[in-house]
Length: 147
Ligand SMILES: [Zn+2]
Ligand SMILES: [Zn+2]
Ligand SMILES: [Zn+2]
Image 1 (cartoon, rainbow, N blue to C red):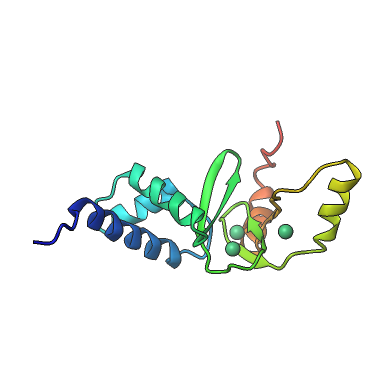
Image 2 (cartoon, rainbow, N blue to C red):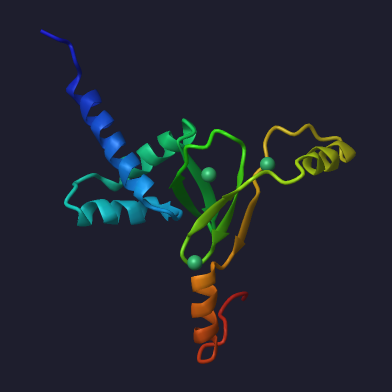
């Protein structure tokens, strides 16, 4: 009797499944990583679906999306306030940080005759755990960064 589309229902269920899986993560994760986590928990969701839903969450402002070394990473985020992140480049752990002096962005743009439409600013580094691990590792393995 109802003209409810089963397809739409399924995609809504997948969306909430993916959103809750993402909200468990405190770090930025890739679609592949989240897909693996879902599979391990017994959910059969295609990687393309995970990817599509993550992008939808990001577009609707429910998730942050950043690109690190050509990999797109996602993290659940309810903050509608403009903010930036401190991101651990080893484990993806992230801390949300408030905007710095945003005037600086407008000023440098203005000085170069640009009108600002958007900006991206993430600070990358190592969290305390990873920096401890890395200095342990560095005694045997000299860094491979930079080629
Ligand atoms: Zn955020
Ligand atoms: Zn870390
Ligand atoms: Zn900003």
